[in-house]
Length: 436
Image (cartoon, rainbow, N blue to C red; front, side, top):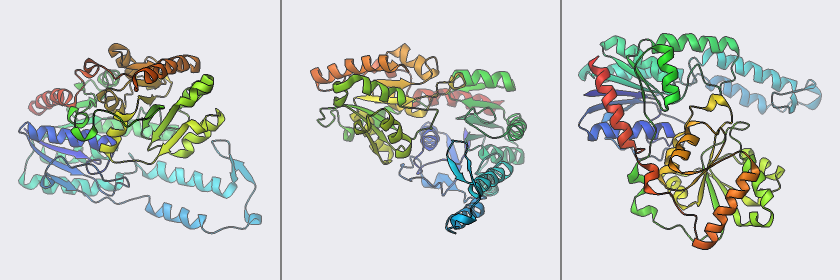
């Protein structure tokens, strides 16, 4: 099978989307398929992932940043240092903080520009280059199927156009939701526009792929198309590599590790911080380490709970170091939005956590996909009650004191969740779509 993969994210950029798509491309090549990749560039993120596939198979299309001009104007205005008497009375921003009125107006104008031009997203400037790069690739090589992964969903626009041009089917992979994203705070008219555009694009796909069964059921009902559920999964080779080691460095503290960023107000460590405060003197034996999070999203919450001294924030690290950090932690923290709309959300880091065989502490929705998987596999503890969390921390502290480390998960906890198993299901699905 010949597969053209279209995705803004692809190695070497170090993002969870690039990890999934990059490893799938490698899987297809190892299974004997002929693969070509059209990806973005200038991602604005660390480029530390190994490619995993020959460079000759990849074409990086140069994007045009449609937001560069407005960003430059804003930077110039910030440097203008307007005198205090030239600034209009202050107003309250959406987060309740006071700000000069000219900044409020600039923010509103900036949002309006984004809503009017970033359709479907802020990578729309990549579309012309992505489409032309696909055309050049397909002049001498004709795929049997086009596989586009989003977000960003500009990849879907490129895939649809090249699909219509060369008359081959295409499949859309929704790693996250598009028009139905509950994290999107755009106005109603923009939501309506996204809904109309999503329907016009996805109705041309022969099939859809998403990452959890609740989302798959939603899209089956919405579009009446074949939809495959493919978990992000984990790669056993990443976690069983000798360089990661089998034992963590000596650390007298119970280390609770978190890898990645935070969504303020929606993925919130406050219940954990409250539990640490309830522990009193025992809490002094715990350290919560955030790797890659914004300190401004962490420290104020820890200070409110009076546990700032128990919290550490480290800068982002390359992928392999992130896996090592996870293996060396006693417990791994996962935060979900405690809202029913989060029910089908299951981030890629959750499967990395399971792959590391470390117990998981989940804060957030207690009947969501991650919580359900954890209960089925006895993979950790889920609660939003600081008192219950404190009780669980005491159990882990006892294990740490007795054994030197919190006991890891059994191998059975990650059974069936490897990327190889998940990708084999995706391969079967794509074969069916290419033959349809």
